[in-house]
Length: 404
Image (cartoon, rainbow, N blue to C red; front, side, top):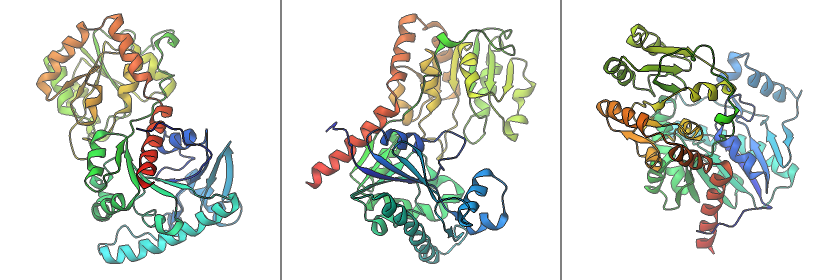
């Protein structure tokens, strides 16, 4: 595959996550990497009619309202080579419509309003011959290929959104059509790549970027007070404790089978976790939410890190970024086997059921030499945003090569 860097181009990025969102965002990280060698216009989603009517107090909504009232400029420079557009328009709230035909008509109207604002920014910045990168925005950006006429339209998949209720009703029909008419589709997991290939032969796996610089055990000075006295071995998980993504029954099974192990869970809980039997088990410790800067200190205390993912249509294809963070600290890991996890098979023990978790964790505790830890760290450090975006460039160059 051609590994030529793409530079000196104009790139428009649309997607589901706003630039000013507090949580991490694949789309934003990719845009920042694009901007090292190209000019980037990052487009935030417009407000919809219902959100505007509800008058939500969130900072992002307030900011968008100021743009609508003319109190803030729609287009702003946020860093070198990156401009952020807050479109000065309101879209109709149409996802509740059951009729696909009516939805399509109104969605095209929304797309035209959206494209009109983007075109204003294109003209103001003098963008030409631009690439359009769409991070999973299958509704608002469905018609942007014909409305903006980019040199290439790139669709990016990183979640199985069509299994989520909000996207399912119309997305089951629209997303495959959008993938099919895109010039290429790129995905952060092999599972989504195979899904894309059903509709577009130009579907490419581009991996996942992850900034693991924080997860350096040499930077950790001491164990936090709420974990340092917990009995070893510690079998731990870091992340949101959410029933839709984690297997509560599996955690209960591990804790019951091995009462001499300490099961440590770091992260906020949903109601299902709060009401689970785990809270009555003496060897299970809930340590609550922590700031991201604190996480390496907790992870360092784990003897084995786990990812007890529950298998369902939403989770089965997800790339688990936490695995890179675990590996960056050299940790032994046991995780649930999925298609997306196969790329980690050389460094992670992949269990097919709850019964396999026990012997795999025992094996992980034993197989923990310094040389093995170094291999884990080296592998995690290869999953950079620079490498992921280079793979996107490689895919783009493949399409150009075939086109020419």
